[in-house]
Length: 206
Image (tube, rainbow, N blue to C red):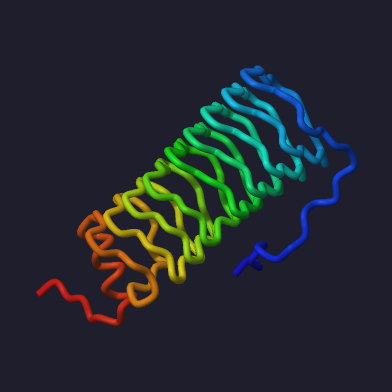
């Protein structure tokens, strides 16, 4: 199992962008590597194919931003707002989120494997067809969220709450019903069998 990144230091950056207003900017296939973004306003930014590698975002605002086919690889987001942000076919592998806000977050497709979201408030967030292998969702609040057709294999979900969430079509093999809150969550019959086996039950056809 991958090591949690919650206590690891930020990537070492080589340049800084501080206090700039990027409101509504369009980002094409631009590349940003080891850049520290401090209090930068990315509100309503439209990113198409942009790449951020080992960057740090502190106190940044991504509200209502749209990211299609973009990549945020091994980045760290601290005290940043992603309210109503949308990610489509984006890659956030290995990125870490600390004390961020995610209201109305929408994620369609893409690879979020090894992402660190410990304790994240993901209530009402939507994840569809996303690869989230070994993602750290320890203690995450996912009430009424959607995780549809999402690969959560190997995910860290101890202490997480998925009350009233829609988990249909997702890989729940890492879920231990004794360690995760699933009250009123929506699942399929096949997923119910997986959870029953994880709970130690002997499931038989008759």
